[in-house]
Image (cartoon, rainbow over all chains, first blue to last red; front, top):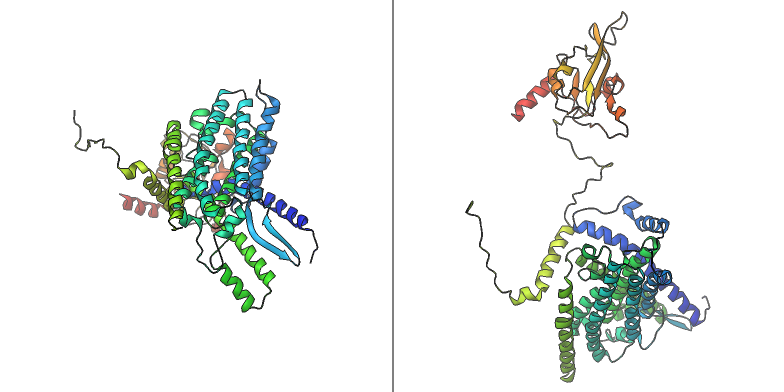
Length: 359
Length: 187
């Protein structure tokens, strides 16, 4: 077996996670178009390669070869920093997501996770809330009133919905008692017990989180920051070429990350039903070693997690092509007068249920 | 003023809790879009798939030959006269000795041109022709082109090929009898 220090394995994992998030984001653009087409009784892009699978490549070539445009009076440095920041923060947040359980080769054991920290959830929240700076700076530096309006909208929307999102998470924290995403995942499936994913204990919290996730990723029905009907293109009105590409791309990376977070927090992460039974069956009936059986289960769990993520990504797109956009006052009312009180109520409810020993 | 009895007076009732919660409406919408996801797609992938033509579609003209491969057209000019768009021009000529295998009658069209930009595909030339020489094919359209003069179709593009196999590819190019029975059926 290849002998690598634990850090070596970990860097491979980080690299793979990085590559995977980019790959998935790339194919999200394709999936979005195909799903949009299917929901509208069309067939979508099918010219580039079999089933149009090379369409993302064609799009990338198009993006790279477009004219790079700087609006007059724009702050050049900030204008470039904006999309970079959006992309960096989007990619950074996937670092703490546990994509799988432990893999062990000989004496080496490592987690299928970029970095295992005991503040994983805080990390994601910090980085995601940094993401609004990318939008904000880009819109501000464009020297365009539409961009500025879009940026301001993005900022106020993200701040409003982050509150409700954070409070819906507190309920999860009260159940789990830890901020580590890996711990939260492991708690959702304990050997010898019923697999109780957090969605069973936190249905209301999940709905609040889901709605806020749509708002945080600027997806329809909350895509006010780039509201084409009012703001031309919102914060990326003045962007062209790959800088625009980075903005669009970071949106898909964000969707991927937030889908992963939802799967981990509420849908058992890399756990799947009957995993312990399956492992024991491999060990007892097939005569496998504990390590290899565990590795297989880990890999299956990773596949399972990605299936959950893809289901969420599909849901995001499904919603986008179903619901129209909110009006801005409706958006604010929903955030402040409905979701936040609901989240507070959810905290109280969870506390009461814990107190009386129901969950 | 009341024009019909279909006018419906709308009552503006306060919304019920379910309506205000918005979620039931969302699920309804989602189910509708999901139904469309599995529906048959309306798209026709054009170059590979062609929308089927009607059996009596009037498309691109063809100048027919007779059973022995001779051109039927005698350049009588009735098609040009009947053409409401004045799209057809021709020059008549006399058949020389030794050309009996090429032209059916003593007179034939030296040149025969249809301007497809003028043509309205009404089919009056087909009806006017006493020699059953010109037909509008049911399976071909005049394709788009870049230059205007490419739309003036001469004999090189109008007369059907000599070999009998190629002359009636899908059996859609109707003989006068078939066309007559078909027209009766439509009426």
